[in-house]
Amino acid sequence: MTSMVKFFSIATFCGCVFLFSACVTREASPAAPSDDAELVQGQKVYNSKCASCHGSAGEGGVGLQLNEGAVLAAYPEFAAQVALVKEGRDAMPAFADSLSEEEIKAVTRYTREVLE
Image 1: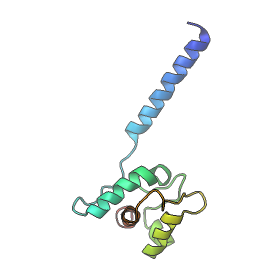
Image 2: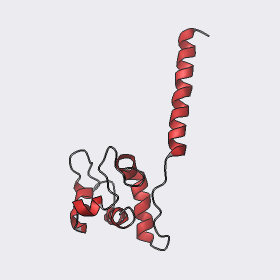
Image 3: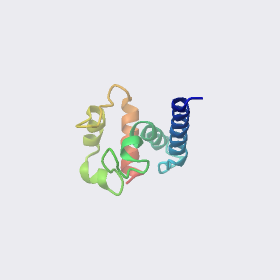
Image 4: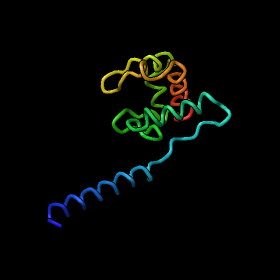
């Protein structure tokens, strides 16, 4: 095996290990109450569409912090936050074309009531 092939084999292996460990060690988002179907749906949407930027617990990262009351301070009105999720702003994409109205309201509730 040539040294270049060995290098790429080792680099590929290391990359796969890194990606696998990132997936395995990722914290779960705070659990929605299991008796509230809308919040459970909101958690699923949050995990699939929001957590990669806003953090699994809303702690921020690429996107703004949402937990510890930050989302309520920035968007005291539910409708204003729904509009932001639909329309996006700055680096945040618009989700009006990829999420239903029901999903948008569910994820908005989740960020306001569970991440709080």
